[in-house]
Each structure stands twice: as structure tokens, then as C-alpha cells.
Amino acid sequence: MADGTQFVDSDTVEHTQLLVPKSNLSRPYVWPFLIIYPCYNYLYSNHYDEYFVGREWTFIYTLAIVSVHALIWLLPKWNLDLQVKFQYNKVKDLQLATHILMKAKPSCGLSEICKIETIPGQVSFKYQKRKFLYSSKTKKFSPPKFFVDDESLTIKEIKSIRGLPSDKVPALKKHYGPNTFDIPVPTFMELFYEHMLAPFFVFQLFLFLCG
Image (cartoon, rainbow, N blue to C red; front, side, top):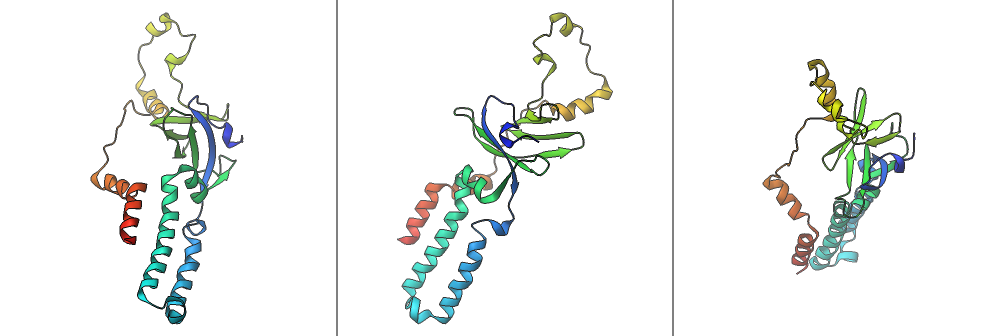
């Protein structure tokens, strides 16, 4: 298998990387706090008079720990590079990978982490609503090539086309996908969740709690 940076044939992609998810326990917003919270509870329960003294300091310490935990949890939601570092391990073998990072070139849309779908006879993923298929010949993913994309195609050949036999339709539909353009309408809860996790809103909420 080729290296992940050579896996996609596209003029709009600057960099790619094959990925596999980390286990939940190995993520930086999980395992450190499995130690921090029990230690904090131990100090609160057994050494309150020595370290906490009063309710004010208890509130400050608790708010500080929860804020740091929340910030580390939110960082990968705000930054794609941090999401890769926090939640995934890099791999070089396509057979091991479950996702692929698609880093877009400037002015070529958003970068994404795409899930690799594997079905009998086909390995693919969707990026910016486009399907990318893996070719065992080129060792790369690329959008499906259509009949009309052939530069040597002549008008005579186009006029000679008589449609598709019914028995070929399922295989071609599997290869190219349906001829639709889907623009999903987000639900209220999806919009509300996105707003709640926006950096500016989180900053306002933090100032309110500190005030």
C-alpha cells in the first residue's frame, strides 16, 4: 500500500492521511481525568480543612477543573487538526484504516474526516458530497470517471448510445451512486447543539459563571 499522502487523486486536496480511531480511554479528555477526579474527591473528603478551607475556594477549584476538562473536550470540536491528534491514530495501510483526513486547498471548501466504506468489490468514501472510489490499479481514491469524461469521445459515439440494459443498472448505480444532490436541512436540536458549542458562546458562559 502507498503512503496516505498519495491516496487521493484530486486537484482540490492538499493533504490526506489514513486514520483509525483511538480507544475512548486513550483520549486526552478521558484518561487524565480518571485520575484527577478521584484525587480531587480524596482531597476534598479527607483534607478539606488543609486545602479547601471554605466554600469559595471549593467553588473556584471545582470550576477550574471542570473548565479545563470542558476546554480539552471542546478543542477537537473547534479544530480539525486537534481532532485528528486527540481522537485518531495515523496508519499507512488502507486495510487498517477506517477514516481518511481530507485537507482541502485554500478556497476549495472545508477539510473533513471521512469514513471509509467497504462493501464487496468497492472501497469508497464521501467528501464534500462527492463519492471517491479506490482503484487497485492506481492505488488511489478518485471520483468516478463518467463516459463523457473521455477526451477521445466523438459525437458519433455519443449518438450511437441507446441507453442502459436493465441488468447493468444496479452495478452502475452502486459504482456511481444515485443521480441526486442532497442538501440536508439541519434540525432545531442540531442547530442548538452547534450554537451551544460555538467558541464565543462558551466564552460568554464561562464569564457568566466566573462573574
